Every structure is written in structure tokens, then in C-alpha cells.
Length: 425
Image (cartoon, rainbow, N blue to C red; front, side, top):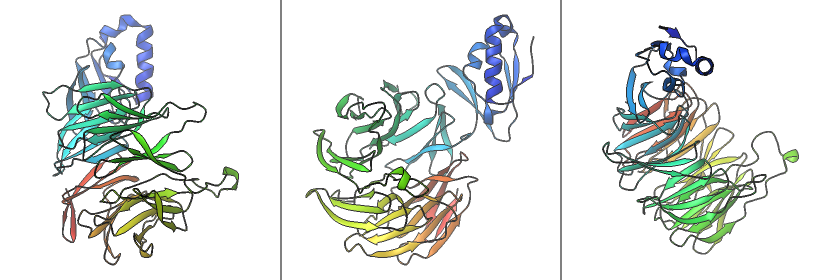
């Protein structure tokens, strides 16, 4: 009998698996292994150990036993590595996170882990989206599958095979329509109830020069879908008919040899609350605002650095842009005048959002912090330092009662917002 075999990480896990594939007569003799759950690759190793009766863990974190379709899986509570997706349910009841560790976690707004499961065949989770009624969650991973999960444990889940892995998946908040953007260039609309295909907006592109959708956003009323394409161009589609409403050619991106050090362009777009105006990043240093109905450009905002994220205030009066120079710039959406410049982060700002009441702006940064600012005068309210690595994801709940963030360290932090104070749960 082989007991107490200690493995030293994923590479050793696979080496041991390869060894057992050559020595199949030894597989039934392995009864006990010792692993570090922070760096443990359970598949395909556990499937070969038919007589395994004990797994010992070296970990400082609580261990959860998860019953999967492939059998019993043991995981440390919480994510092991980078958070790739963080979404809040429309009814503000749930927070869902997906990670490179192949797990999806459902949290309540008190910060309690409600449910954790392994999705797909142990491949990273790339994108998540809640249904409008908050009863379902759709996910996409690197295994080229889209799965519709019911948050009712006893209900069945639905899996759809895609032609490539989906970098982005979004669910319209005002209709039962899901949109997917695949790595092979395909952009498709799906019925959120049945996962039947509704429209294919873009077909598979030339593999040598894929026209990959870099961002995907529904309008609040569910009427429009905007996608940002390679070359810093954008397409606005009419969702019900699946027809192209407008093609927006972004400002010219400099040739690589002429560009300064750093990213050549970034892709982000966001509708205003009335679904009539669309700001999007353009070229290397600008945001354009378009009138969707008239197909005309309203404003051109220039910046001293690349803009990599945009967002409207809840009242539609302000538009913010996240800049690569570690600042957040806020403009009057009607006059195009700059009204705030938020400075203080020590590294790149990844994302910024207005609170639902419009009183605050929160920003997440690679400096491992989340900062909160007052919209009225740009004054700094708080610096939140719970993460130990870059903070990439940030979201207020629709009711404004929580502010959640996710980082490369695998942590998800859910904070309760109370007037001038923000408390980590």
C-alpha cells in the first residue's frame, strides 16, 4: 500500500499522474496523498486512484467537500487564484465570482459563501452574467462551453458547445437575451430561457486576423447591443432583429512602430440610463459620445493618456473615463467640460463606477486598493486595502447597499455602504 504520498504542486501532480499511467498496477495501491489545495490539480489524477481513501491538506484555509458530477472534490474555501469575473444579481441578493481556479462562488451580500462549485473540466472561468430575475447564472470558460446554472440546487443545468471559448458573455437586464463574443470572432445572440440561437451577428473570421469583439454591452432598455472590435471600431446592433444599426469608426490608432510605450488602444463602451447616448474609448487618448438614434457624434473628449474604461452617472449628467496615467477624469456629458480629476492611486486604475445614488465614485487599482470619492467635489472619502494583489473588478449592487471587488489574489471583498462610511464584511 502507498500511503502519505506528498505532492508539491500542479507540476508534481501531473508528473505523478504520468508515472501512474506507465505503472497502472500501482494505481490501486495508492490509498492516501498529501497535497497543498492552493496548488492542486485534482483532474485527471483523482480519476485514476480508485482506492484513494484519504486526502490530507497543507493549508491555512478551511476545506470544503464539493459533490461534483465527477465525484467528491475537496477545495479550500474561496478562490485559489485570480478572480476573472465578478457580477451582482439585479435584485442585489447575490454576488457571483469566477476564477482561474475553475470555480464559481455564489456569495450573499453579507459576505457569506453560499455555494461553491467546479465548472467545466477544470478550466478557467472567463465570464459570468445573471438573468434579469436573478434566478439563473450563465458562465463561459476556456473549454468552449456556455452553461446556464440554476440557483435552485435541484434544478437542471443546460450546457451549450461553442465554436471557441467565449471571452465575454452578457445578459440583457431588460430582456431574456444573452450575447456571447467568442475568440474565433463569432458574436451571437441566444434565448436566455432555452439557450436557442437567435441571431449570429458576426461570423468566424480569418484565423490570421480575427475580428474579435473586445467589449460587449447591452443598453439598459435591452434594445441595443454594442460591441467593440479590433482596430478600435464599434458596431451597434438592434437586438430584436439582429441587424446592424450603426458602424462607428474610431480614431486612428498609431502604427506600432510610431506608438509610445504601452497599449496601443483600449476598448470600452457604456450606454447612458436612457439608452440614447453611447460613450466609447477611441484611438489612444479620446472618448467619443454618440447619439444612437441620429447616429451623430455629440462630443469628442481628449485626454493626456489612454482611456481604458467609461461609465455614465445614474442621472446621465456626468461621464467618467479611467486613464492609464492612474487618474479618473469626469466630464459634463452635455458641455464636455472637465468637472473632476481624481488623483491618488499609485498604479494603473482598472475600473471606476458611480454609486447608484450618484453620490460617490469608486475606483479599483493595480495598487491593491479601492478608493471612494465624492461626486460633488472629488474629495477623497476612503482607501480600502483588503486585497494583496491587483484589483481588477468592481461593482456596486443595484440597491447601492454594497460595494464588491475582486483581485488577482483570489479574494472577493463585499463591503456594506452606509452614508459616509464603507464597512468590509
